[in-house]
Length: 251
Figure 1 (tube, rainbow, N blue to C red):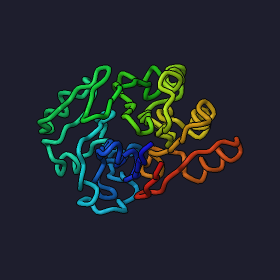
Figure 2: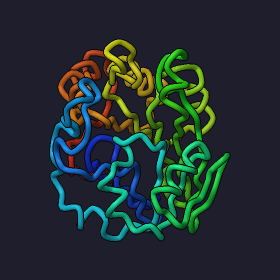
Figure 3: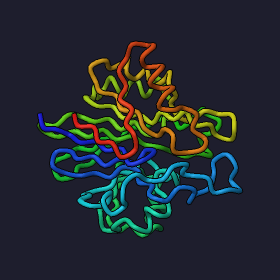
């Protein structure tokens, strides 16, 4: 099986070298404090950390973009400005208007599945919070990547753990699972991302998979830290890989 490089850029932004292709996932490329706070919208406090990589290096060699949803911490104004608008960008239909208005020319709407040069891209769904906030937060997607001779990857996206996510894990049985585990709090009260406990549930569900936790320590409404997640995983006897910004995990 061929090797796969997964680089955490920051937050949920990833650069994945997979089956001979390079995918940029959920690009948020702005400088520290270039975007509004999700706790106090009157201030620009996000991202809470700067990039550890040069943007030119991040964009180099990218073949396609995967966008789980178009919230600004997954596609920010800087990314919209700098990305090559002719690159294929794989999106959910919910975001078609916004991505079109942002100037992208090669939009591929994934309803169930799509293909990019030998890589199969299956769309999954999830709930970006409890039911009473879903209308405000909109639809979100995940993607499962598969290719001959490569490990399968499930990019879960901004979801809570529930029976739907558990069913996707059972259906696809991926070799690698990438979770967004920051435990973000919406409007000061509702959790809208997996936290330590729910990330552990993923690792328990697929003990033979490599679980990589992202969307941590980069936004002001995220409660989970790398330290708190590592502590919880150790206490529960499961393995969760928690990369630093800029770190490459090769699997």
